[in-house]
Length: 111
Image (cartoon, rainbow, N blue to C red; front, side):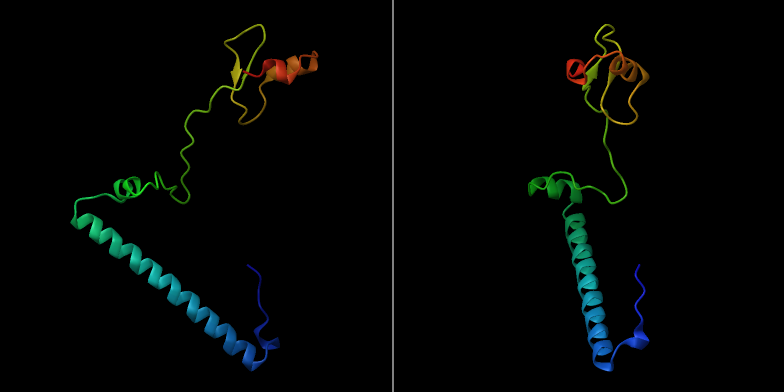
């Protein structure tokens, strides 16, 4: 985070900064309070938030810090050995590096 030199700011600038900080804290507090109210209402009706969001057409909501990618679809297959596949995620497999070095095009291995 960038450090602010408060001693170099004028009194008016400091007052404005304080007002901006207070406003942001109030906004965040109101948002958290609204979320809690929605959770309580949903719980009182026997609903989970996931069900409620699905009903509203929001689908799954990503949880911050957790990613559920699941298995990736196969995007590349070895030209001679179809059991060797790669999704395109992570490091390129040895078989693909060898095939590319031997002159096989990436497009020809694409599924």
